[in-house]
Image (cartoon, rainbow, N blue to C red; front, side, top):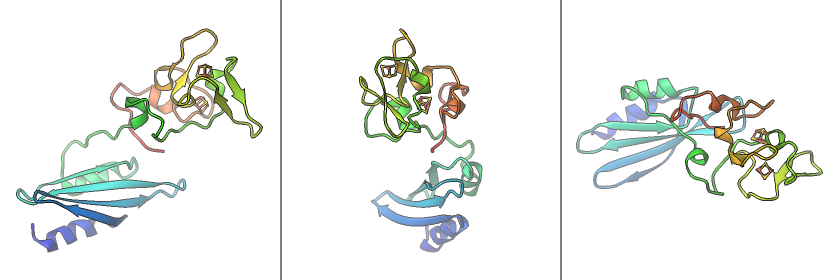
Length: 168
Ligand code: SF4
Ligand code: SF4
């Protein structure tokens, strides 16, 4: 691919602020950020260009621009963007929990903090990841098919398995 073609491709994504790139023998990876007016976060976008075939691939965390992003590179059906916390139970993954404690209400291990939030005295990665009520065995929040007022996970529990898309 000629440099000018990559330049034009980058410019087509006028809503992206491109940031860095890595170039290997086979690929060029270019990533950037997409402003998200509804909150203080940004979505990422990663563009992969195969130097030999001149084919593009793109991944993004953006829900709002999802279709638009994939239409630009004409990739067909876009792959789902999934949350790391739903797949791997690790501490160093972002979560959406507001620490309201509603999903663990009544549990003796639920600690109420002075700032009005809560935490679990058993599980490091509970709120947002694990929950249980009364004598139920604590399980991942995504597997608890209940809505709690204001809980960001409500929207995920109605989705078919494998379609847990979205970022914050
Ligand atoms: S997972 Fe939801 S309901 Fe449970 S503590 Fe977090 S925000 Fe509250
Ligand atoms: S995750 Fe389980 S042990 Fe921890 S507060 Fe919630 S219900 Fe209690």
